[in-house]
Amino acid sequence: MEKKLIDVYPYRINGKNVEFLILKRSSKKIYANQWRMVGGKVEEGETFWQAALRELKEEISEKPSSFWTVPSVNSFYEHKTDTIHQIPAFAAKIEWTDERINLDDEHSGYLWVKADQINEYIHWPEQKRLIRLINDILINQQILPEWIIDLK
Image (cartoon, rainbow, N blue to C red; front, side):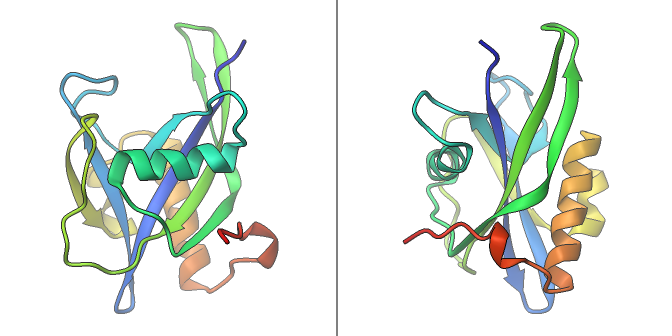
């Protein structure tokens, strides 16, 4: 059975800026020392969006104040398994906090960055594209009601 994956792009609003939370992978984990967003596998019995919320909680111990599906997917080909992945993307608003983010053991650090800084850290083209897309949607205040996932 093909593994089902999700991507979550945590962000915060800092004044007039949108800042994205990126995580540095531990040197002992897959994608060692790479900067990435929150991601993971869908477990049996979960929907994609439920897996995204669970991964957000597991990886950074946060619950979003707003959570929505991004109207696009992260697509890439994995040659080792000869698999084309179609990964749903979710945006998760994290309320401004001066407190440290609590990372799990999969990560060794984190940064808040603006979309125009993303090339310095993220190397996967689809992840960069999705960050820019989310930034544009937020800047233009164009989140459609159909994308919003009710957390109540």
